[in-house]
Structure formats: structure tokens, C-alpha cells
Image (cartoon, rainbow, N blue to C red; front, side):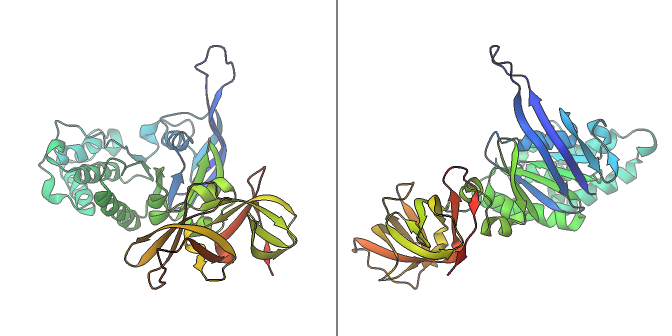
Length: 367
């Protein structure tokens, strides 16, 4: 089911009695979610991503704009009639019911022509339980299940009615790191098997990038960039996107374009052409540094972190906007931790520059 979001805006009255201006949670949101795709809504807390999910589900009505499921305008249709499955951050399972009863609950509330026989409900329940691999735990109550098992029950309950659209609101945030990794792999497997159009809300960019077909990066209710995860990572549209995506985060420096060169502080690190001269932010991904005895960028060496397959070089530079610069290099590259200075050349495709005022991307050609 293709989902079209056209000009969605959500405003709330200000809680400050002296402030008459409305609070804008989402502003003019235009995006089309392809049929059968898993799209990650990504951004920091308060960026409007959960508000977007609530508008798609029908729990909140947009102040402006329309929502289409396929060719059907569902903007004014109630949540229960939209054909959505919704999984919350806190699972929202009924504590007095078993896993079986929790999954059956949406089917038992069907009425009229949609009402199913007991046998049909049992069959659908078992299909959903098998899909999320919890058949063995159907007679347990939520308190007798682990966090990951509870999450699977919640997903099964959302899928049992064969929804047109599956909505996941930070479904992994209550799980520990190992279980979070396992469960996100399960969500991706389930989504691929069911081919249901899915919207996944998270502030964790690692989660969004690992399982999404496309991501939508948001800031203060406004779309910053959309695209395939790797494409957005490799070509951020502005400084916010560059800083938000990536673990470890991108390194940001005060820089300048002058005489056909990009400078980090006083060090010319890249020859370029067709770029207006002036102050810029220079950013380099951690994997974009190449240690070299005669490297263009000079940094003070602070420490080395040996991680097995790679090494993190922790250094400092007066032009850096953070206290430390983190560079990730192959473990085969040997460095003397007693050195006071380390020098780097920079991989051109891992370096981005942004306007010092607007923070928009400035594109360049290397010489």
C-alpha cells in the first residue's frame, strides 16, 4: 500500500498564555512511502516524528494537509477503519491476558462482515505467532515474558489483522543492546516476508540505517533529507544531517576555502575548483583519515584505542569544534603511541564542506 503525505502540518496552541503563536510540531511534510517499503523516520527527540506517526495512524488529525493510502484519502477516517497496525514503545500489552489472548484481541473485536469464526481467528493467531517465532510462549502472560518476547507479541498483535500499513513507534528503545540488535533483525525479516508498508520511528540512526529501505531525517518538524540510508550518509545535504548520521559522529572543523584549497585551520588539506572563497565548516568522516608521515593535516596525538579489526586514533586540533578528533583506520596500520603528533591525508569523498552561515552543503570538484 503506497502512502502519500501531502503538506502535513500539525500545530498546537502555546502553553504560554503570553505567547499567542502556535507551536508547530510538523511543518509542510511532503513524502510518498512506496508500496511494500520500510521507511525510517529519524531525528532527535522533539523533531515531530512521533507526531507524524500519530497522524498517519489517525490518532491525531493534521492541522493542514492530506493523507492517502493508495488512492483513498484517509485523513478524516477513524483509526480503527484505516487498516493500520500500531506497535508502541511500551508494547501496551494487556497484563491479565496471555500472549495468545493479546494476539486474538483485535480479531475478537471485529464486527459485521469482518467478523471471523473462532477457527479462523485461531488460524490467524497461529500464523502471526509463527511469523514472530513465539509459538512456545502463547500461554504465558506478559510478566512471564522477556522484553524481546513481549515486543514480538506486540508485533504479532499488530499483524494479525493483516494491516495495510504497519507503524512502529520506537519499538526497540526498552531493550538491551544485544536484544535490540536481534529484534531489529527480526523486524526486518518479518517486514520482508509480509511485504507490508512499514513506518519505523526512531532517534537511533544506527537502527534506522540498518533496516530501512529509505530514511527521512527530520529536525524541528521539517524534513532535512530523504533517500536510501547509504546515499544520505555518503552525501549529506546540510551540516545537521552530516552530524546526525554516523557512529562515531563526523568530525567538524572551522575551515576556509582560499586559493583553490580547502583549509582546516592553517593546513591546506584538499585542492578544489569552482568553489567560492570564504569561511566554511569542514567535516570529515572518521573513516576518511589516512595516516601519513607527510600528511596535510597536523594533529596532536592523544591516544590509541585498539578495537581488534581497526584502531581509533584520538587526536586534537585547534580548528576542531570538539575536544577530540576520532579517526578509524585499519589495525594493520601501526602507529607509535609515544608520538606527540600524527599527520593525515584526507579521502576526498569522506570530506564535506558547509556554508558557515546557512550550514547548507557546498559541492566541490577536486583537482
